[in-house]
Image (cartoon, rainbow, N blue to C red):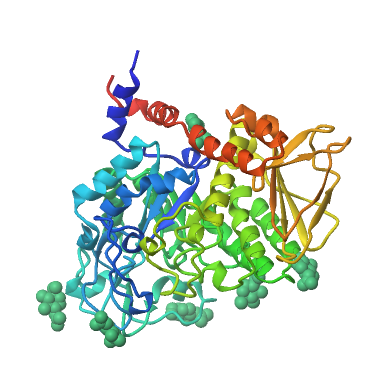
Length: 530
Ligand SMILES: *[C@@H]1O[C@H](CO)[C@@H](O)[C@H](O)[C@H]1NC(C)=O
Ligand SMILES: *[C@@H]1O[C@H](CO)[C@@H](O)[C@H](O)[C@H]1NC(C)=O
Ligand SMILES: *[C@@H]1O[C@H](CO)[C@@H](O)[C@H](O)[C@H]1NC(C)=O
Ligand SMILES: *[C@@H]1O[C@H](CO)[C@@H](O)[C@H](O)[C@H]1NC(C)=O
Ligand SMILES: *[C@@H]1O[C@H](CO)[C@@H](O)[C@H](O)[C@H]1NC(C)=O
Ligand SMILES: *[C@@H]1O[C@H](CO)[C@@H](O)[C@H](O)[C@H]1NC(C)=O
């Protein structure tokens, strides 16, 4: 009989090496290492407009894992780890990590190899996963022409495509073989058609994953490398791969779901922002895009990364100041088929505009947990976990859009969860009339965002009036009690604040660390000598 301590010991020293299936029930917190936490807990000033290193490190992340885990996240995605261009450029320093110079060295601004190993090991002790961001498409120069001998291990001009900057995005050859960036900081395009380079890249990713016990890989600028490069690269990584294919059309992005485990769901992100950015946004267009993706992606929307913000796009609260619209948009990724991804700072209502303003230092927030959006995220993570454990098909049941009787509202059904969204805005009194909600007659439900009770009608339909334009996320009280919560009892007393206690407790009890460790152990037991 294995003791938990023994299992913990084995796992702390090895990666979960997690597959796509193992990532599907996760919830990911994306962070920019330089901007998340300093190693000594200090709070240096950080003027985003200067684009300089501000002092965040891998050790800093380790010290703030409670903050991330308390919100209910069980995975983190960190910015790239390899050595970058040093010094100032026309666009500042490489604090973001996307300007690779040497794929075989780490970026010393973020710590040592031991620090990075300590991060994955600290995550694994908590049953959490580590996703590392990688760039294959290019390396960064600081002059035109670039100094090819400054790159490692590809240090001759012939290791790169000939210089030309991408200008026509409708010409796929150009997208794949010309360069991103500009003459100030050219993103020198690696010749990924060359067999030796392919081999080097595949060996590199395999080594990176095993050296640092990485559980998943986020891949930058995927559409800028030929599609048939990716299957062997993903196989060499040996863990979950999720690609960035920055494009608004599901048809275009769909092809990449054939060559990697998954993609970031950019085609849905465009209509998502448009739908909730103003009170006149088109909710039907958002639903229509999801339906296209559900039918055209290799695994439907399952396992795509569902997100509202990231380091490349203006933060959502920079586009609207209406808190209700923000609450609705932020709910979206947690009630969809994909793996929810939240960009650090959303929970603190950060509102930076386009890059570089959207890369604020999180320490300036004081990591205060008593914030409305932080509590909302915590409730959403807990509700998703409760839905996953109440319905063994939750993760494989595609979201359905049910009729609500109003153009400014939307009902997203993923049994036993029903998300009621609206873009009516803060001054609206939304209502949702959902006759086909699919609940049992008179079933007791709870809105996890307000902890108020709702009772289904005699036909299992839902007829709800909200307030202040806020969303609601309904889950049967029975599903909540299955996950060990006591929300039902608390909420019956009509005390919203008491009911909040359910969320607190559920967030703690659902991702039971021991259970996760055992699951991780079982999944890789063939690798463990017993
Ligand atoms: C970095 O370089 C840019 C462009 O030359 C310049 O505007 C900026 O002041 C420099 N920053 C520092 C800290 O040297
Ligand atoms: C190019 O890079 C190499 C290797 O880092 C360095 O030795 C050399 O001085 C650089 N050349 C120029 C012109 O900067
Ligand atoms: C597409 O781009 C490639 C590479 O720049 C170029 O050789 C080719 O002529 C372009 N094709 C068209 C149809 O413009
Ligand atoms: C994608 O963007 C292009 C360029 O802005 C636009 O012409 C096209 O209609 C968009 N497609 C969708 C599905 O929104
Ligand atoms: C909203 O989007 C739907 C689906 O794409 C489209 O048919 C409809 O015309 C759009 N409505 C408006 C007001 O643009
Ligand atoms: C995720 O699914 C695995 C089975 O694939 C299970 O063992 C684990 O407990 C689940 N974790 C969560 C947080 O639901």
